[in-house]
Amino acid sequence: MDASRLKITKVSTPSERKPNDQLVFGKTFTDHMLTIEWTSENGWDAPEIKPYGKLCLDPSSIVFHYAFELFEGMKAYRTKDGKIAMFRPEKNMERMNKSAARICLPTFDGEELIKLIGKLIELDKHLIPEGEGYSLYIRPTLIGTSEGLGVKEPDRALLFVICSPVGPYYKTGFKAVRLDATDYATRAWPGGVGDKKLGANYAPCVLPQTQAAAKGFQQNLWLFGPEHYVTEVGTMNAFFAFNCKETGKKELVTAPLDGTILEGVTRDSILTLARKYLDPNEWEINERYFTIHEVQEKAHKGELLEAFGSGTAAIVSPIKEIGWKDTIINVPLIPGEQSGPLTKQIASWMMDIQYGKVELDNWLRIVADIN
Image (cartoon, rainbow, N blue to C red; front, top):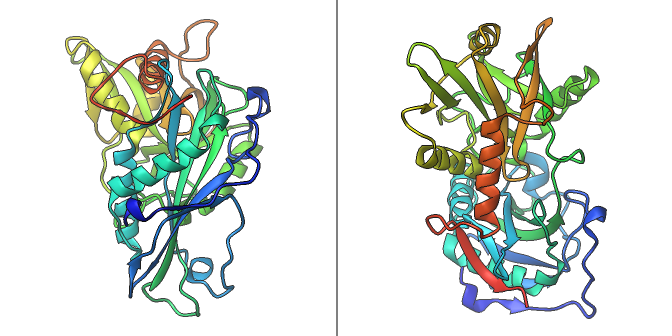
C-alpha cells in the first residue's frame, strides 16, 4: 500500500454540514470515500478517493457467502486549537491487521493507511461537527471479493473507508443503561475470534440484544462458562469498580485479554489513564477474571461502587442495573446524576484528550487544519 500513488476525484458540489441536532449515529456520510483494491498477483493497487457511492460486486463474491469481512471504528475530532485530529489511529491499524491475518485477508502498512485516511478527512473536513460529544466516525472495512463458490483463501480483496459525522451514540445521551446478564447465548469462546473485529462476531448478537430489549434492558452483559465470567457489555468492553475490604483499597477491574475479549482502543486508553492518574494508595487497576456472582455478592455487601462499558462509539456508557435470573443488581450512581464518580472522571479525561485540551503520549494524530 502506497499513499504516494493516491488518485483523487472530487464531487462537483460539496455538501453542507448538517446541524448537530440532525445527526443520527451512522446515518449521515461525508462526500467522499477511499477505496484500495488488492490481488494476490499484483498486491495493493493505487488508492483512490472518489465520491461516496455504491460498490459493484459479483453475487458470488466470497464476502457474501463465507464472511470474509472485518472492520474498524475510529474517530477524528475538532480540537480547541483549530486542528482535525485522529485518536490513536495506530492502535486501530494494528488491530485491523490482526483481524485480516486471522481470516486470510491481506495485511498492509498501517502508517500508509493512516496517511490516506488523513487525506480523506482533509477533503471533507468542513462536514465534521463542532462541540463536545460530536466527531467524525471513521469506518475502515476490508472484504474478500474473489468470485465463485467454494471456501478458500481470497485472491482478491477491497479495502474501503467511509466517514460519518456523529453526535452521541445513544439518543438519550450520557445516561446509565440497564443490562441483561446473558448466559443463554455466548459472544465469544476460547480459540475463537472474539478478540478480532469481524462482522461475523456481531450478527449473532443481535437476537439476544432484541430479547434483552423485550425485557426492558438496553444491552446484554455477556457471561461465559459454567462460572458465569463477566466478559463484555453489548459491543463494548466492561469495567466494574469494587470496594475491597481485604486490601483497604478500591479496585477497577476488567476482563483479561485471553482471546475472547476485543482489544478495545478505548479499553487500553482507560487502563492507561487510570494507572496514570488514580492514587495507587487508594486504587488497584486489575485485568482479571470475575463472575456475575462476585458482582452480585459485592452489591449485596455494599461493595459494588459503579460499572460502565467502553468503546469508540460511546466512549463510556454508565450502567445502573443488571438483571440476573429473577433479581436486579443495582449499581450506585451519583445522586441526581447518570453515572458514578469514576465513570464521570474517566469520560472527562477522555474528552479532554480527544478534543486537544490535554496532551498525552502523542495520542492525537493531526491530519488537517480546520480552515
